[in-house]
Image 1: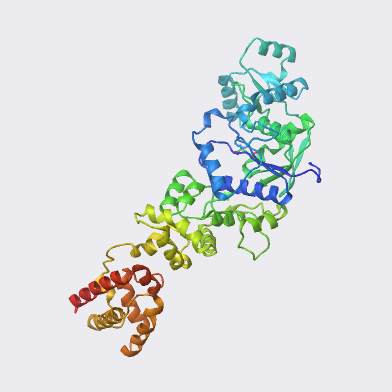
Image 2: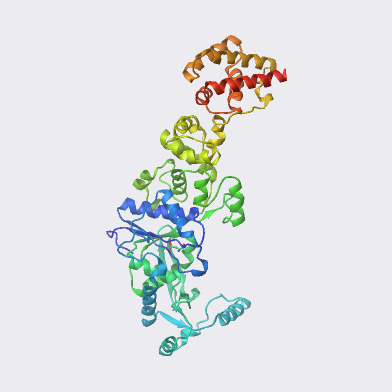
Length: 497
Ligand code: GLU
């Protein structure tokens, strides 16, 4: 176990094999928080040794996703550092050197079995209901002879020589000690026939070389933990603190999310992919707050956290190993809280691209007026154009029936609308300050409720029954357009009479 007085060095080690999802975001976040809190280092290492699964663009999406979340690293392929290279494919020779070392010390061996033979062994084992694993044929070869075959260029892999006797005990920080019988473990491939190390060797070697103190990774790696401990022990290296994070379950709590379910989710305005969440109008602050709490808590009541709070209070001993169901309602909740805690200028700037995407020509000045009107009403930024699009449109074309206030006839509603028009015509500017007092006086005079009278005006101005604050909205719409809209509403009401 790494000594307690060693500086904390953690790494996020994604494989660029697909889109960046919440699980990666959470692992990176926890790594980052632990490093920042301890004043240690956070390293980004790209694990790209699996050429078959390599996806073009995946690395860029990861880097962009981390930047968007506000996660920065001290060492990595883009920023360099004292323990590089940080891209695993560039560490091929280093991995091979370690593989040879294991062969020389009798902890690994060369295997020449062809894939067809391995397939036959697998089928036989399945038929006789034995555990499927390498049958050890090449383990019994004379090492000198095997070395000669390798030197002669024969196609081969390197396998770990798992002890047959005894047990392996490893400690996971969240789960305590885990013991398995070595007899159930396989002679796993450490170097493939293409000469590239597998994750098992590459990650252990790089963690050692990069002086990693804590390995924080997904629980899907737990079954490989005894193998990893064995590899590290075979080298005689210090063992890191192992932290396997809880798995994410789909919102129903049953199982992991499939591709198809992910696509369905997107239709509802949600996604498990970080880039999608950005496009759907989530703030990085909201996503960080939400994911931080998927598997960690400070106590049983504190739930609002900004990144700088998390850096102060986050700790590994408050992690929870139980699977966490993804709860998007909570994401909306946290996102709403973070939207409300932004300054108006910040919110305006973040909203602008969403208005532009919706086809509204939003000047900075206009956005500064709009942001405070809708700040309290949004849980995602992309709701902005729906809530405030009426401020931009030439014509809001309300449905005539909706202009009729509840409890009033069309004729009475038209009276209220005409009297409101008179108020509007009588004021020089249509600010909330100027408009509201005479409108309240009108409500008194008419003897109807404010809900009824203002409701008519609201539908006339916005085309909506529920809208941002009415008079403040009218101020943004401007007196000229307000007059037009109210006259159009009166005409529509008169048609109904
Ligand atoms: N490349 C591995 C993955 O993406 C990393 C696991 C680890 O952090 O060691 O799953």
